[in-house]
Length: 100
Image (cartoon, rainbow, N blue to C red; front, side, top):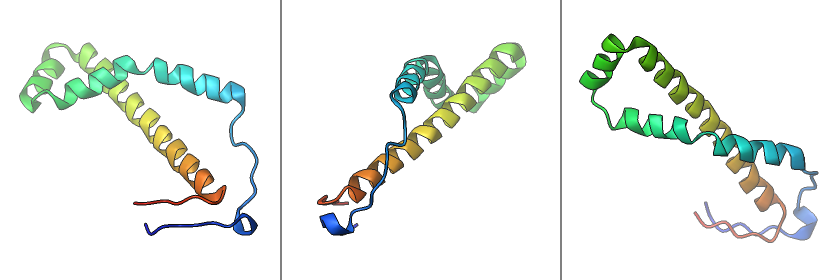
């Protein structure tokens, strides 16, 4: 993205998108995602043969791991949306140079 300079006159006006309570809740949620993150990393570091072995020998553990990884995926998609929104808000606030 080329350098972008907004003037104060062209800046958008907006109100906060989150309350302090929502921020605290999101922070707590992020702290609780450590096990899900570790399981996602473990799945990426495990061969298909080993994952199938887990599925066949420990189906309940496999399902729990699957559900944790899926929940982590949804959580990180939400974080990506928050990051995109935050960047847009910063750019719209004005007098910001974005270098990409």
